[in-house]
Length: 272
Ligand code: KMH
Ligand code: ZN
Image 1 (spheres, rainbow, N blue to C red):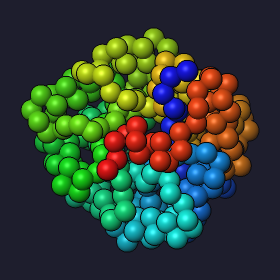
Image 2: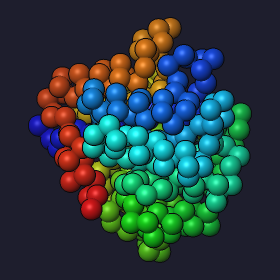
Image 3: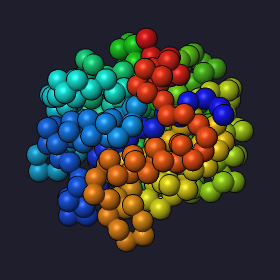
């Protein structure tokens, strides 16, 4: 049967646009509504980015604060995870603007990689700095791993004491420039973790649902959402985040595992 399965919804990200899909939320109000709708459908965790009203990515604290306040004002107890990845090209201090009151988790990207035609820069001293800030704020870090060498960075951070329990691992598979979403790759990464840890898979684009199904089979957790994938099936746009969450929730049931509530997720992820 295995551990209860956490479904995370990455509701907007920094890259997808309304030109690509009318369902992409931009304003804090729209992003908060997307988060609440995802929670109603069964997501226990929401991964948040913010946008300026015109859609440009934003790491401004005021935007994150408004999103978090609106989520809580709706009576929604979803676990709030804020991105410190932001968008390609942002500086580290700018990226840290997201660590507002009310955040419970924050992403910690484990290295530099080609990100499509761009480069997502995460130099080791910057990773250490971001890890330190996450620790100061008493947030649980989610370590984002896009490529095999990043496991070595995870091991190094633990060895040097820059990272300690509790932490969560996420394998992001299918970024053009990182490892793709194959069973061989996921098994290799899971086996290569420096120590046993709970983990999630975010499959990008067409890898989203196959990786969700595989992760559930291998004992991992699942991330879906418009940040990673805009489609419910080949050529068919998702109406919104809830449709993707609903598909993940169905997969949880089919896998024989039980869906984690936000309270279950806080227990599993060791959020104080
Ligand atoms: N937007 C990507 C460049 C994270 O949220 O920490 C990085 C990203 C990872 O989305
Ligand atoms: Zn993100």
